Amino acid sequence: MRRAQPIAALALAAALALAGCSANRPEVELSQAGGATGTPVPTQTVTVTEIDTRTVTATTTVVRTATVTATPTVTVTALPRPSLTTSIVFNRAAALADYATLVGDVRVLDRMSLAGNAAALQLDLLAAHLARLGANGAPPGLDAPSYFGRIVSLGLFARAASDEAAASSPVAESRYAVIRQETTVLLSLVNGALATTFTLPPAVPRATTTTR
Image (cartoon, rainbow, N blue to C red):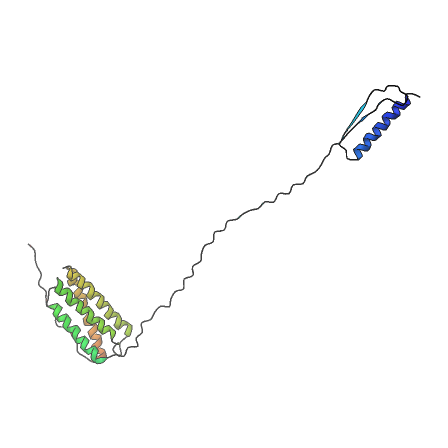
């Protein structure tokens, strides 16, 4: 009967230990002292260890950065191709005077050396007279773009020959030969449109210098 009391005390201690575990206490220590009969009872320690297992769910957010290089767009709008038109009224009297001046320029250039400042000046005058002729209207019956194209080309050649003559380049003479030939074609077109008789004088053979 006396041994039943210590056993009952141990059972009570175990029950209290379980109660502590249910109360979410991780560790409970219970010590049993002497019983009510005064008989010394060895001290017994009951240790209850609670293993807390928790599941942690980790959510990872991946941020991707994309680098976009913007290329500027350039829109090029082509301008309409200009057409050669003229609203200048053809001045017959002024044109006839300019055609005669053109013939006179060729006559002077035929008789002079095409090397040096004098020839360069005369070729500049020819280019100026051609520019004045181009400022007038086109003769009736002639294709205006073709007519003005010839005059502009002759003016460019005359200025180039002037530079070459100033440098005493032999190319000036060859270029002048082309100017003379194309001027003949221009005057023939003018004669057909205006019923005129402009002609260039016969070409004068130029003296050549032979170096020994």
